[in-house]
Length: 216
Ligand code: G16
Ligand code: MG
Image (tube, rainbow, N blue to C red; front, side, top):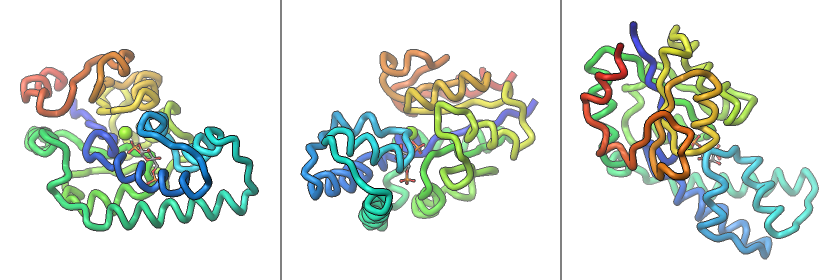
């Protein structure tokens, strides 16, 4: 039967992590908190609010809700400025051919992202038309590893969880897919993503024959 191929956004389709990093680093600097690329790893796949909590904890900074609100707003404004000029050249290597192959095979394609900026990014990199369903940070109340974002995507398409396949670069996202009994495919370091059923360093390692093998 027809499968639902669900893609995470940041770290799978595009490398927006670098822009999140620059925007968080600017805020951290203003707050006198040291924030390194290593620290940034902990923010991958994590919600905006949780990301701020992690950064404040790094610097032992306590703040009022109003301050946090202001900082989240400021971080997002800076992030929006960084992604303003994104275009199709920022789609990660190998992603487009695989999306097009899945499409040509008549299968469903969905987005399952924690980001509230997912839709404008898909527009900028010009692949919105390839998606049959989009579930992002605006649509869900539970963050990965809760599988809500992926379960809703499958539901929108009318696919069972067992007929859903998830591409993820974060540990929390792989755990979410596994909890939902979906097929989990890690994109990135196999040591970090060891809970994934399959792993590829990036999409250039995914052959059409691998996609075919999932269509049973
Ligand atoms: C992502 C990133 C996270 C980011 C989150 C929320 O999602 O990996 O680092 O904190 O979205 O993003 P925003 O501030 O744009 O709402 P994913 O799930 O696509 O990897
Ligand atoms: Mg991701």
